[in-house]
Length: 173
Length: 173
Length: 173
Image 1 (cartoon, rainbow over the protein chains, first blue to last red):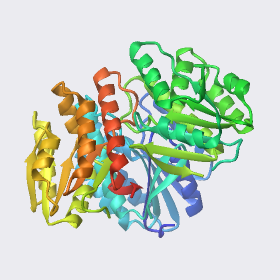
Image 2 (cartoon, rainbow over the protein chains, first blue to last red; image 1 turned 45 degrees about the vertical axis):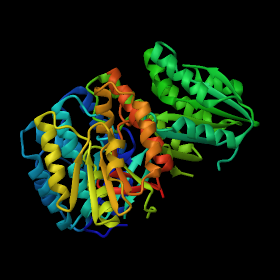
Image 3 (cartoon, rainbow over the protein chains, first blue to last red; image 1 turned 180 degrees about the horizontal axis):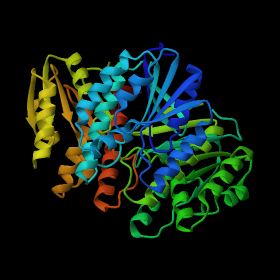
Image 4 (cartoon, one colour; image 1 turned 45 degrees about the horizontal axis):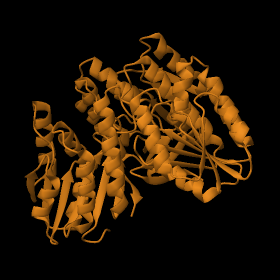
């Protein structure tokens, strides 16, 4: 298990069980659990997904919704007695792109901030780079941003998991 | 190796060698081998794929074609002396969706039935959740259905493999 | 580590860190390093990607650009004192398809040639088969060609790695 101030990256595909696995890790970490939801409920489908995640998660979490200023949010709730679960990085990257933010700068800032955190932080993200090259240029840029961010976070993470069919494969740690 | 009544899930991408790997497992299991093909030959490309699979498989198999009522088919051929190979779950999910069936109910029914089988059963499926989020809503639903089904089956499976480049990675067992 | 004449296959998704990992392997192999770039700079985006790869790679490489006749190029530079890095196979398959070449014949030829090489050869390729089935027929054929080629090369390779978030998972070796 990682030290209290080291981060854990949980990668997986759609409906791979990555969020549930990450929640299980968090429950083993600390009683004071904070959940940072990066998704925006911009349509009914997204609202359903968010509600389902919240209901799957059960009680015992303080939930924060922060689609854009992830580092600011993490700084605000950082405390050595806590575990913080960020779900998920790919939605955060999407939100940054939609706001025309400098994704590479924001990603570098997050990757630099994580190792300084006092709370244990668990980050969930979608692996999106294993299909055909998308025809849409923005989708290609998104894939590149997500892949680069995963590499940066994995480099300093204490543990990295790849989830498929609900099962974890430990890549690091 | 799994007990005689436990199931094995073989996941992999397109042309990953998952069917061939599963066939190898089946050959090691029992001489009385039954193959349940869920694919429908609705066009020339699909007919080609089915014919190629059949020819790759070689002799020594009793083949059943069942695109929809998978549990009914499995119940009919269930026998402790047999190994049953289902290829593949993702085509079955596609067929259920095209028939407007309740995919979640059918998936739960299959997941509940498998641990009761007397034959050893090997299920092949495509991992489809590791690319960009599809723009098409039905494709997103399909991904969710497939991912959820994989989690359900993996939870009770004795062994789970992830195949890439023809090589197995054991996720469970 | 593989013997001097055996090949190494490095698979991964977009921006997974596969090229950098392969370059690290090459640096550990031999001082006389040859890089075979299969990509064609047919537009500004592709030129950017190629330039970035070249700059990431640093000095100490002899670079060869060969989009189509990969076996011919490998034969020309084959030498037991060298390590040859091919980046990447999926771009090569794309180029063969665009030229209406017989991809299966060219793939079989490459797979047969690699075990005869005197140089150590490291091949990088994109895993592209883990998303939704593409609607475009050519994309489906491409996926099949890439998957088949990976299986053929992995069968005789000394080592096979799957890279995610910059981290290697050893599949063989």
